[in-house]
Amino acid sequence: MQQDNRTKELGTKPIGELLIKYAVPAVVAMTASSLYNMVDRIFIGHIPEVGTLSLGGLAVTFPIMNLSAAFGAMVGVGSSTMISIKLGQKDYGTAERVLGNLVSLNVIIGVVVGVLGLLFIDPLLLFFGASENTLQYAHDYMFIILLGNVVTHLYLGLNSALRSTGHPHVAMSATIATVVINAILDPLFIFTFDLGIKGAAYATVLAQIVALIYIVSILSNKRDVIHLHSGIYGLQKRIVKNILSIGMSPFAMQLCACLVVILINKGLTKHGGDLAIAAYGIINSATFLAIMVVLGICQGMQPIAGFNFGAQLPERVDEVLRKAIWLATIVMIVDFVLCVFFPQYIVMLFTNDPELSALAARGMRIICCLSPIVGFQIVTGNFFQSIGMAKRSIFMSVSRQLVFLVPFLLIFPEFWGTDGVWASITAADGVAAITAAFLLWHFYRNKATMHAPRTRMASTLKRVFFHNRVTP
Image 1 (tube, rainbow, N blue to C red):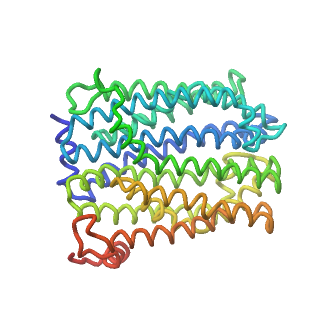
Image 2: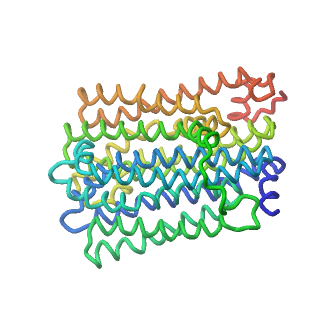
Image 3: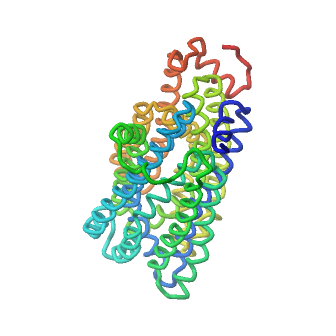
């Protein structure tokens, strides 16, 4: 069948060609996803008279959205990784049942998280940093987003499955469609229908509904080896356990991100008030674009690394890791140049408020000063996740957020105020990159895991950064 041919190429075609084929659609999709969030913020920031407060209200919804996304990522990433590995092992029956379990888990978790969020929405927003001035705006946006929580979970989870089942371009098209639809509906709902921040939320959910319908239609194609059909949705203990185990890393990362955003918001509220919260919303949206590009590269790497790991082709696994690190580093160097030297031009997209613009530009410079090494850290964590080494990936996720960033957030702002909050993020990135390098070195020192005991990390790093050809 056609899908079988698509997955076989993961073990035969040149790695560079494959990475381009799988990463480009994923990068486009992730960039579109980032723009999807930016579009909301750009339009919301220009709502007459209340744009700055609306941005502040939107910023305090980040922890709830991260918490919801944590559960979605656990299922989506865990399932797509399992599908890639099972396809590499030619275990098509299990791969299909994983797809069915992905749907069932997303529906169950989406409903539970959505209902709990709606029941405790105001206490949660106040806990996460909302003030009397921003609470109503945050509530209006988050209430609608939580109503559509199941749609969001299914859309993100099945979009990940598309890439693992040999449909990277379809995944890209679905994500682009959500951006285009959202960009069309945002000004219509926000300004024409005078719905304000509620309009942005309606646009978001409706765009995801349209994309989800499209994705389901593609994954229901009976000509594909792996497709949606009756009989695969019953939860199986072994499959669910493996999905959650592999997906625990992105879950931990998102959960830690939730805690971190709480501390960031509280630190900014204490030292800078609602204006600082709004500035963080702008910085987060702008800098997230480069991170999403890197994550797109990682998503392109994931099926290649997972398939070849399952097929016991370690040289190909090594090669896709090296190339992904190179691409991610280049992206983050570009991010460094733009955000450190030209932040004012980025900030002006979101606001015309001079005080808010100055605060956001300064924060962006501080946060992005170590951007060139962030790509290596992200790729390394996703590499361990792609080959099913959940413990290493979880450790990297948790250590960056909890072990490094939290202490910095508790200490630095007491000395440097708002600048201390920005500096905490930068310092955590630096220490996390060093940790990633150590774990990767340790992995290659124990190369027997990959059935190639003579390969050494030093040789790998030379090949990565200096193009030396080293024979194992």
